[in-house]
Structures are given as structure tokens and as C-alpha cells.
Length: 101
Length: 365
Image 1 (cartoon, rainbow over the protein chains, first blue to last red):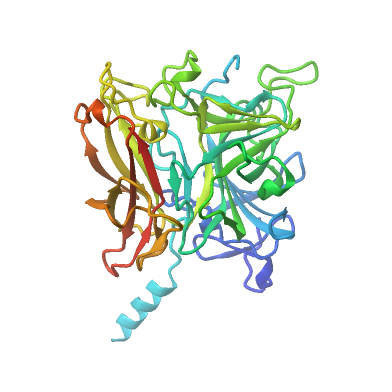
Image 2 (cartoon, rainbow over the protein chains, first blue to last red):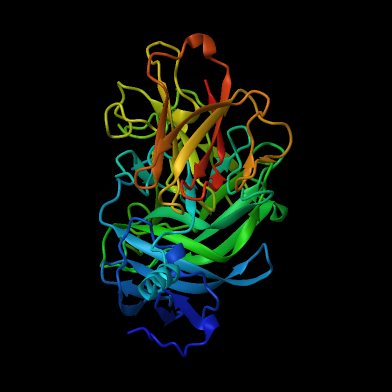
């Protein structure tokens, strides 16, 4: 379970849309609040666990199946690493793959 | 008195449960508010090969995307991904580029506006599934304010897409897309611009080779300002998946008013995730104001010709989108073919009367 602790240093917290704070994942510092990625028409869904992908990225798993995370990524435009607050909402179906070009 | 203070304090401290940005997407439907029925296929920019896929944000068609007043900023990126096998994550990148002298994305290092590499999708329960990916930057990136640019996704080669390989069952990352009529694919849904309309998406390969592609994607840069799109209305078309429904991508940029047989109508649509109770006010003109956008006292800049713009009307939003009819089908004469009409709007907060300018868009009749 993610840590919800007011003693978490400011730069290592992710502010959730319900106002609570959790420790960031993947060593991210100073990420944008999760509300900046959370859709306006999607009710808040609490975090239920953390899971790691096969490429080594940790994701929060929300009760509704949404995933969220924070990562530090190199930004070519500012010449340094910068935090990215990330959201992945599952879609149950997708259009067909085009069988040819 | 004390209870009023407590209530006011609670209101001030309440964290709004709203996104703070809007994705600028050129696609027949609004993926944030409409059920997507217009996606033809899931596509990659160059089949299963490594490539960058772009949506062109051309000053011929759009101005003021991301404009907050004297500057334009990218706050992140949004796209609808499809993963043929969600037990494995898919790696991708975000890439924004300037225009090269030939009108395509500048593939040189100098052409990079922003590049964020090695992002990945999460893993899922297995099998073919889509993800709505939203990536928000802690530090916004500066966008061109008066020049064409290109917004896109990088995908690495994946030989397992779409049919699998000797080493893997089907797997790989693709993007929800809408084919144009020019693509002449078997899809019954997709874009509905006039046949032969200019392509607005591009692919760039490592060679490097760049070429246009005949589809649009559900992808776009997250920006601060409201987004405006023109909907083309062909009452006899179900290309959106719904007969006669407005198509807000290329059909609004390049409607068919030839009368042989189509005579499309138009409507204007503005979207905003930030001010939930906003009122959209729309304007139109027959040209751009020369040079950079002009501040009018609202957030952002005005790009329409100040000498001849016309206020077209206002609309109350429902769920963050406001629509104003502009021309019913059958009312735009073929004599208007060749005329460009520019549209822009402001999203007003009815309480404070503060407003934020949307981007501007051209409809080429």
C-alpha cells in the first residue's frame, strides 16, 4: 500500500485528487499533482496497490483499474530530467488492426 | 458567522477534481466526452517499423494552440494506445517538432521542440486492450506561437505487430486512428473531409524519410487554453458511426460544399476542462490579423482579423463542451468554394467574466 504520511518530504509526494498525498514512485521528485492528469468527468478511484511492469516501472493500481505513476524523464528542451505524472485508463475494446497498410 | 467562515475555508481548501488542461486533438470525435465510434483502425505511422507519427499543427489551419498570452506551452501529451498483448509493456516517446523547408516535420536535431523518451504503458490482465495515456510534464515546454509545428508519438520497431513473429505472439503498440476517404480503406467509419483534402498527419522514419499519412490519430498535446474545432455535417454520412453527426476533425477543416452531391453544414465546438461553468463565445473572420496574436484582455491572444471579425454567438456548455451551429447542410453555396473562414472563441467564466481565448481554426470551403 502506498504511504500516506504528512511527513513525506514535499518534493517526494504526489498530491492525489482527494487532497491526500502519497510518496512518488520511481524516484520522481516534484511531479505535477495527479489531478492534472485525472479526467474531469471521472470520479476519483482510490489506490489499492502498487505493481511493477515488466520493464521495471512501478504503477499505482486504482480500484477502477486505472493506473498512475510518476517518473523522471530527460527533457531535451530544458536539458535536465523532469517529472512526468502519468495516467493510463483501460479501454476494454479497440478497433481492429488494419490488416494491410 | 463562524459557520460561514468554516464553510468558506472548506471551499477554499477543497481540491477541485478536474483536469487542468485540454488535449488538442484533430479527430472526428471528442475522446474525452463522446463514445468513440469513428475510429477506423488502430494504426502505426509506418507499419511495424520504427517511426514517429505526427499531427500537423499548421498555421494554415490552426493558430493559438496552447496560447496563454504571448507564449504557448505544452503541458503534456494524450493518446489512445492499443496494446495487442498487455502482459508486456510497450515503450514509446513523445516528440514535438518544428517544420522543415518542405513543409514536413524537421527530422534534424535542430527540429526537436520536445522529446521525452522511454515512456511505457502499464501491464494489464493480458490480451488485446487499449489504454488512454495521459502524460503531464512538471515543467511545461514552450511551443511555437506563430509557426507550424508537429505533435507526435515515437514507436520503436515491433515485428510482432500485428500478426506475431517467430519469437512472439501478436503484440505491440498502435494508436486509434480514423482513415480519410482518400485512404480508400474498407473502413466504413473515419474522417469525412472532401475527397482529396490535404493530409494532416505525417510519418517520419529513421532513414530519415517523411511522408504524409491518410488518417488522423487520437493524440495531442495538453494545453492550457480551451480547444476549438469546426464540425462538418453531412446528413447522409455515418462516417462518425452516427448518421448525420458532426465530424470535428478534417471534415470541419475541409468540408464538401460542391453540391455534387454533398453540401455539408458546419458547427463550432469549444471544449474546456478547467472552468466547468464556462460560456463559449464564438467569432469568425475572413482572414488573420497580420503578425502575432493580439491580447484583448482575456487569457491568450486573438488571431482573427480585427478589421472584419464578426461575433457569431454564444453557447452554454454541457459537460465541458459548447456547440454553436454555423451553417445547416445545404446552405453553403458552391460559389463559396475557395474561401477560407477563420473561427476563434473565448471561454468565459460567467461569475468573474474572466475568459480564456481558444485556438483559432480555418475552414477551407
